[in-house]
Structure formats: C-alpha cells, structure tokens
Length: 142
Ligand SMILES: [Zn+2]
Image (cartoon, rainbow, N blue to C red; front, side, top):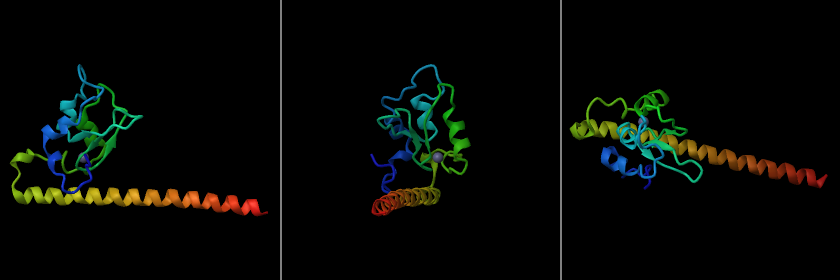
C-alpha cells in the first residue's frame, strides 16, 4: 500500500485504516489500541527496526515510540496541529462532495510538501557525499 498515491482515498475510511494494524504491539489494556489509532486517522507503517511507526494518512505525520497510555487523538493534535482530518467535526461518510474535495485539496498540500521535503533531503545527502568525495580526492593528490 502506498499512502502517497493520490488515487488512494480508501484510507479516509476507518475500516481500511484499522486493517493496517496487524501486528501492532499495543492491543489490550492501553490507550493506543488499533481501534483508537485508526479512529485518530493513523495507519500502521512499520519498518524492520521500528514495529510501532504510525502515520496519519492525511497530514502524513509519522509518530513512533508509542507508550501504552498515549492517547492517539491527543498525540495527533499536539504533533500535527494543522491536520484537517483530526480537526474534522463530521464523519467522512457524512461529508458532501464539496466538503470532501476541499479536504482532498488540503491533503494534496501535505502530500506535495512531503514529496518536496523528501527530494530536498535526498539532494542534500547526495551533495554531502559528493563533497566528501571531492575533499578525499583533493587530499589524495597532495
Ligand atoms: Zn494528521
């Protein structure tokens, strides 16, 4: 699943987000259950080293290092106060077409922002490496 895919609107729906939480480390007697995570807009995006990475499908904010007592909705609001999804007063199912498209427009801003930042990071890493190579070869020639 690629949450960045613009055609991917299925994560607007709770059930689809909930399905991603297979293998989520917090299941019982805690605040950040898969149900509460999915309700707060998160999808589970684990990596090999971090089984507890979750990302908001809307603002793409990634959070890890969850503690059992963490409230997903509160965490989402405090780490990503500009997210329109967590601020939504209605259920997605109850939005009219205009409201939905406005929301999608805002989501696209987050997506574009993230892809630009990823591009900048990649460029900076490549530039750093190139610079180190140049210095290395310059030193070698002395
Ligand atoms: Zn969000």
